[in-house]
Image (cartoon, rainbow, N blue to C red; front, side):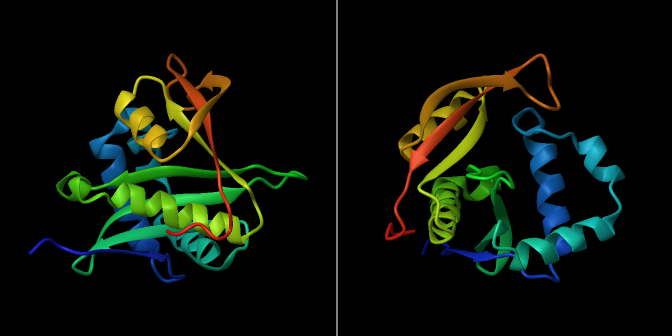
Length: 174
């Protein structure tokens, strides 16, 4: 029997889970994110509590957690920029290597995209490291395509990332 996967929006009291998953992601794939493990470890743990509380209830920011057999094993953030006509994004996607074959990343991105669609957006964006060909292929399989926009990665300025976009509809299935 294969383990089942579920996704739920983070709860306000799950700051420690958020910190655990974020540091695990930065340990396992430091090249893939816009921050470093060292910087994250310097952050006061209570700020993860504050982030979890905000992401549990905000109409513009959310974190979704992936579980297998009741254990957290992945996350993705979804947000809408504050600017008028702000773009929607998914970011910080990570799934524990032991369960990647179960398509948890796809489930996380689809649930986050559905939530963003429910907030009224029709496009979801993602900045993807150009060096991370696996991530590029993953997002392309989910219907994301390059916009042509590029920038230096915030934590690895010698590397570039490209902006991808996916068109969504409020009635899409997760």
